[in-house]
Length: 217
Image (cartoon, rainbow, N blue to C red; front, side, top):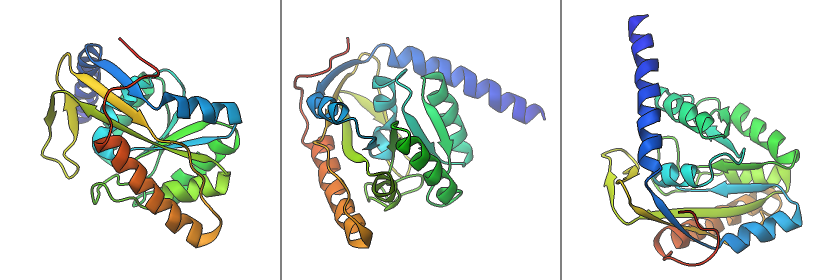
């Protein structure tokens, strides 16, 4: 019991410290017009992002009510608490544990017109390899898919399976969004969607530089 209480206290302290750190980051965003185009179409949106980039991207879209699929693993519990404090709706599950229920929860949000975000290489890798769950959810809900990427001017890279990115204080974060795309019907549609998502994620993560669009100081 004392250990569980200590874990909760540590999670709250860690969340508060991360919030203080993130408040020092400065953002430059490229491709925001793609998000605006998708909003004008009034279609549900699935954002896909690499697990390593999740922290700076989470902070950049805080308070918007986007729904996230987060692992039921213990580490996912800390991320879920942080996400809820930053204004996200959290669905627990993954491709390994509770994945089907989690994806059905996201499809329900999408059919209500919500926006959701997934890390298609999570929760345990392999890193930067898209698994089909995100594309299947988009297919079932007839949603648009947008890839999101982030690069920090200076960061600590954790020795985790994904080399998790923790931007340093006062880092500049370059965020990029891809043009939206759809997932075709059937298994072939999902396979093509996986290939399209991997190309888009590589482009927004490694081909992005500072640009115009939504800015945050």
